[in-house]
Image 1 (tube, helix red, strand yellow):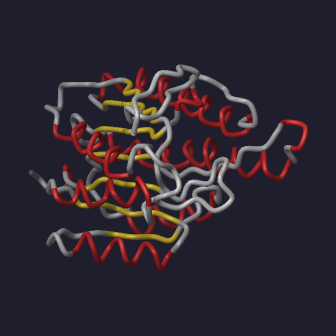
Image 2: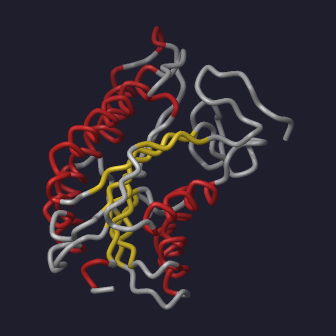
Length: 249
């Protein structure tokens, strides 16, 4: 595989789905470019990737900050001839009733989940279009399809990102860039949501970060002419959207 077809940019890569995806893609021979806010956690993930004998690049960057995205692009991407993929995973959200949702929380959620996704996507697209079959994976949520109570900012931001990704897919398909939206239900990670102190082990019966990463790695393993546009996923013991059916854990 030529070098330009190995590099994959992953946002929110310091833990959870981002970390698991970085390790899964490194094991498959890809070279991760890891972006996340936490430099210490990112360094640990980079060390785990290097244990696979895989080159890795990192930048501590908050994608909600346009200047930080520009700096990270300069340090991590400027000398690359192309990107094989982009995994838009960084995101945040806290469940809050609309009557209690303040403008700061709304703005921060939008800046991270939607504006940040736009900035990273805009930055990466020129490199993605240089690699036929390059893959964009947008990590969304069942909330993008089914807006739940208390998730006004989160659902709106993820729905907006879903629309942005669909526009992107239609605009770059002739350049052989593929776009897939992954919509998981509950995932057992540090993502806060309704939890005051979320961490792996706090969501019994949910998907694991490794479950989602295995699906993402599977997408990258497909032939370059195959485009999977959307994946909805949940564990058997979790609901998806408003649908109540679930098996016992």
